[in-house]
Amino acid sequence: MPTPLFEKGNSGGPGRPRGSRSGRAQVLGLLDKIFAESENIKIVEEALGKDFQKDPVKFFNKYAVALAPKDLSLQAEGEDITGFKVTIETAKANDTER
Image (cartoon, rainbow, N blue to C red; front, side, top):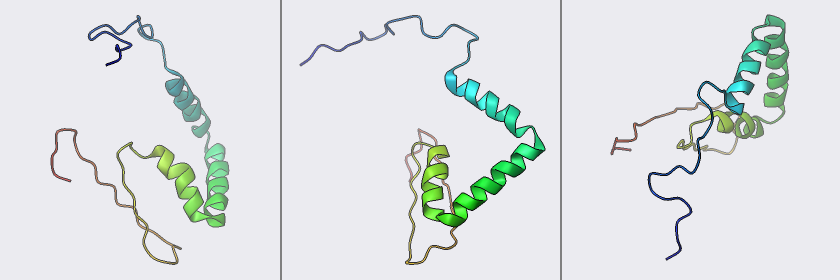
């Protein structure tokens, strides 16, 4: 059996300093500033609307899937998907029912 890379209970380093922001938090902060401007919201809505109209399935895969929780399962049925309804069910980690 190979030797584990990390010993149990030892993280291997100090990690990110307290109070510092992760790259994800910095990007979300920047997006928040951008969307605080009403004209920017309109621009984004128009661009996303055009992208959706062009190919709804590609749009869904590109944006919705990236924003969905890790353990989300989606299913599309039918030949012609021109409209769709998304139902999201979430469960706590300790829930046993699915």
